[in-house]
Length: 335
Image 1 (cartoon, one colour):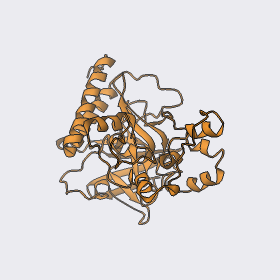
Image 2 (spheres, rainbow, N blue to C red; image 1 turned 135 degrees about the vertical axis):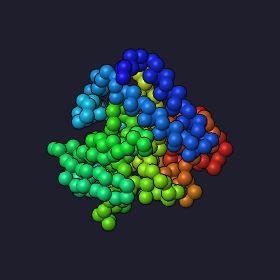
Image 3 (cartoon, one colour; image 1 turned 45 degrees about the horizontal axis):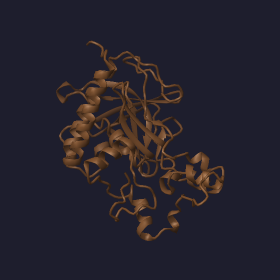
Image 4 (cartoon, one colour; image 1 turned 45 degrees about the vertical axis):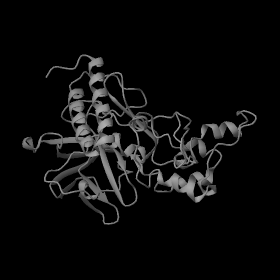
């Protein structure tokens, strides 16, 4: 296969596929899932054969994949839009920070390692449903060997070995995500660990869905959907070089997910705001039931964009909803 030599062409194709998914998600959600799967699969295969670019210092996870030597990239934490991270909150609110730090919200999304994984990984072989997954630990890196669900069913089984880079869930269950190539797109391990039962189940058994005759790939599901509620201020956008850049202000559900961005709050208490400014931070416990339920309901409820423009903004720049907004009022959606 020839290498992709034109970053501009790769960027155009990726952007085209992404916006196709956006449109389908608004009109036909199930069709959007199929389109995202196809886009992610084509994209990962194409990037796997490209010349490896220099990683961003301090951001990329560099892990060799056994079949090919690649730089593995995961979604990254990046502040902005007024978000300053929970570490800044701890400077003035140590007790509140300690309480949050011990919560399931904080550990909802974590960098995967031998310390953060709730499931046993060292030399474990799992057979559930149609899945046969071999797990192991090398140093702090978790590895999984499994069938490649991104190849056509007629070509299976094709066994692959991939590094686990991210985990989601810390209370009832824990999902694991692996990186597959030169993109920040993640793929989901086809099995999920139930923490109370201490056993593995197929990933497609965690949600109420129609039965499927073939195992289904969840390539890109984190980037398209999970990042928005299982991290703080998540967003995904195509890059100029043909990549997909998924970012979060902070992995996990941090202070600012419920209280709003903290930068203006810090400026207010340091006397760096305008004279007539008021403290913009939100305490959900002081809101009315009507408004406080919306703070929780942003994730603990069904969220759907009502227009194509709104969905496009949510995907590329993150949700515009902030605590204290009233989504029942006309014109609440900020430009």
